[in-house]
Image (cartoon, rainbow, N blue to C red; front, side, top):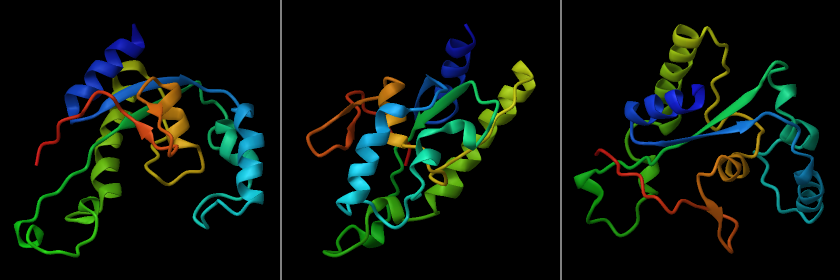
Length: 158
């Protein structure tokens, strides 16, 4: 009941899809992450401590559920449409971290107000494996390139 009410409310708030993952230590990822680090396939922006990457309890000791929200972020800019070399559309306009975090904070407020719950709002600023969590939340599947593929398009408002 709680998850259904919350999912429907989140998805009515802005263009997104939401899912839930029971908090646990994701031990099944440890061997993969160790190997990934050993063959130097890890970018410098990723947390080097693998235990922190697989254990949400190290971020919030009382976590029970991880809410995963996937959001399309598209910005149109007529001045850039005819250019041959431009940066990714995700970087046009406002920083998506700020835009999406603002929406996620509304979710935190709703959880506090409606359910007297506690939450921690994270937007691309944490060590947890986002794509894997989205997969576990039923929001997509992994393609051959290990990118998460969402079979249900989310329509953006531009």
